[in-house]
Length: 327
Image (cartoon, rainbow, N blue to C red):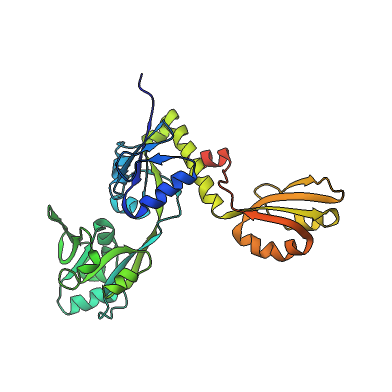
C-alpha cells in the first residue's frame, strides 16, 4: 500500500528564498532546492514541488497540489477557488499603475480623460490581465465614456473584450521597459518603487498590497488525513510568524517588587514565576511583543536584575485556534 503524501507546491522566483527560510525555521529540512524542481523534505509525508507563483493558485484549485504558497496578487488575478489559510507576512509588494515621468496625470481617471480627449488609444502593459481590466473598467471616467464595455485584453493567443480604444496587453516580463513605444502605462508589482524610478516611471494608482499566502485545495481540507497534515504545517508556520514578532524575557526581581512588575507585564497566558534559592527573590519569564519591550524597559531596569532577552524560535498557537480559523 502506497504511503499517503501531501502534495505541497512552493514558489520559484522572488518568494523562493523566504519560503525556504520559513520551512527551515519551522524545523523542516529541505534539500536540493537549488538543483531540482522536486526537492526532498525531512517530513516523509510531504511531497514538494517548485513552481512559478503565477501557476500555483490554479494548480491547487484543480487538486494537482493539496497545499501551496503563492502571492495574494496571483490568487486575485487567477480568481482561483482555494482556501486561504494564512498571510505569511513576507514578499510584501504593491501592485501599482505607473506612467512615464513626463506624464503629469494625477490618477487613472485623469489619465483616461486626457487620452480620450486627445483621441488617443490607451495601451496598458501588464502580467495581471484580469486585475488590470477590472480595475480600469471600474473607474468612473471609464464608465462615463464606455459604459459596461470591457477593455480589450490582448495576448499572442487571443483577443477578448468589446472596447478596442482601451487595450490591456500581456507582458512576459520587463514590463517597466514597455513605455512609451509599446505602452502608455503599466501595471506591475513593486517593493520599493526604485526600478520604476530608474525607468522614468511614476506611480499614479495603487491597486492592492500583496504578500505570500498559504493556500489549500478545498477538497483536501475535507479529507480527514490531509486536513490534519495541513493543520500541522499551518501550526508550525504560525509559530514562526509569531516568534518573529516577540521576545522571550527572563529576569530576577525582589519579592517586594514582584506585584508591581506582574501588574504591567504582558504574556501569552501569564508569566511564569518561581522562587530562587536566594530568599526574597523570584525568577520571572514571559513572552511579549517586541514593541512592548521598549514601553516596559524603564520599569524593568528600575526594579529587576539579571534580565536576559532572546528571540524565541517558535511560538505555537493553541490547537483550538488553528482549527477554528480553518472551519
